[in-house]
Image (cartoon, rainbow, N blue to C red; front, side, top):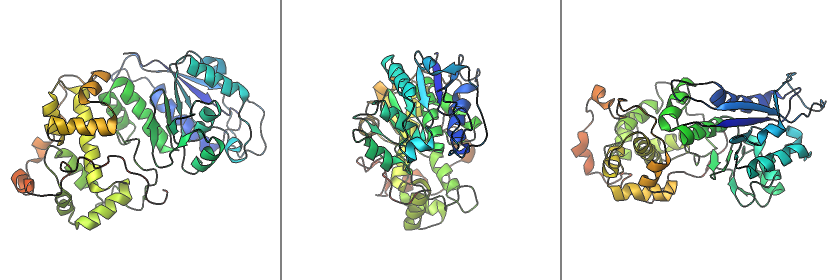
Length: 378
């Protein structure tokens, strides 16, 4: 499958602010380096300059100038157009965005391009009218300005990214990487996206609805972290895990587990478990021909009806329709996602001892997968 061309807008090509280099580097890293062992052909990346070469002395740039081979005319005809950011004065001071950029974005959209913004790039899509009536996000520091300036946009400041089909927007910084990996997942399947994320040493998948406001005061790598127990839980998703199981494994009370997991991930333990089960089900639907009933069993979501309930509620399609929407990219000989269990063996009190517990994520079909922000920013 050919994922097509990706045109990335370079909004400032002289004295580029160091802060904006991060967002610009994300699509370059994800889409610009061929990965022939994962998918061939890979994306065709184009950096497209706005041609705004007048240096602004009020901009605290990094002294970096960029010379691109492509211009705004090359946005038309691209399969995906990404606006990583816009100049700070356009956000903070209301300076108009280049009219040529807005016109080019409209023409690209009219030509059926998939439109994407990272961080403050949402201001350009909003100015072009492409976000009118749509749900969208941006970095939480700028969402109030986005909502005030463009009242027709349904601004959501509590999510990492929003996938509205042909228009996608993300929050700032690392959330842009989450969205770009989500695009790879949509285009080439979960296996390719997961392998690419591993090469980039980042989490394979964070749901778009996960809260932006994550308290990083809880470490994720030291010996006292939740990392080991969460890894253990991922290897046992086919079992009816409970909050008490996780707390016992982590050697802490359920209340402490709830507080620490909420602070570290923005979700409650039950929400985290449901997210992981849905992610496992997505992976199995994309990479195997297992019956829906078996997918529900291996993901820990139970019956086919319960799996269908959660898919319709949280993803918007049935498991069967979801499977048809994704290409098969994982080799048939690839190991099962549960194979790692064989190396670990059964520990703890076992499956039978857990079935009598009452607080399980299976028993709460209305538990939301993607929480709203409830704390301060990171």
